[in-house]
Length: 178
Image (cartoon, rainbow, N blue to C red; front, side, top):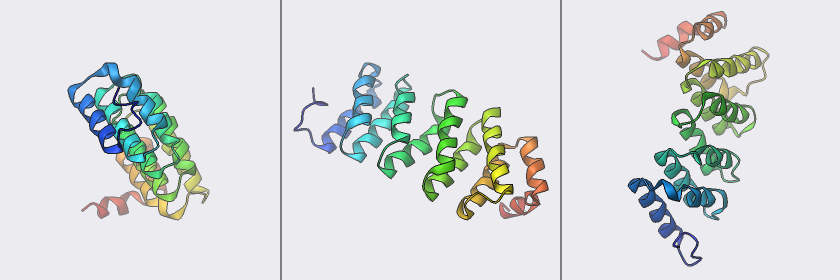
C-alpha cells in the first residue's frame, strides 16, 4: 500500500493519513498507529496522531503513549495538546500529563500543567494538588508556577480555590483576567 511504499514522500504519507481521517476509515487505524510509532518524519507522526484523534479509535491510547515518549519535541507537544479532549479515560490522561508535568522541558511542563487544568474529574484535581504541594515546598520550576496556579484556577474545584486563597493568589489571578 501507499503507507508501506518506501518511495512515498512524507507529504504523500501525510496526505494519505489526512484523507483516511477525513473519510473516517477506522479500519486503517492500525496502519496509522504504526506510522505514529515508526515513521522517520516527525511531521508524519504528528499527522498520524491527529488522525487517530479524529477517528476516535482504541488505537488512540497507545498512539498518545507513543507520542508522549517520542524523541521529537513537536510530537510530544502535539500529544500534550491532544490529551484534554482525547476520547480517553480521565485517569489515563492524568497519568500521562502528570509524568510530563514533572520531568519534561519547561515548555512541555507548562503545557502539561495547563492541560491538567482542562481535564474534568477528581483525578486531575488530585494531580494538581500534588503539584501544589511541590509548589509550596519550592520545587516547581519558576516558569511553570504561573501555569500551575492558572490550572488550579481553571478546575473551579473548591479545594483548589481554597489552596489558591491560602497561597494568597486567588484574588490576584482573578484580577489578571479582567
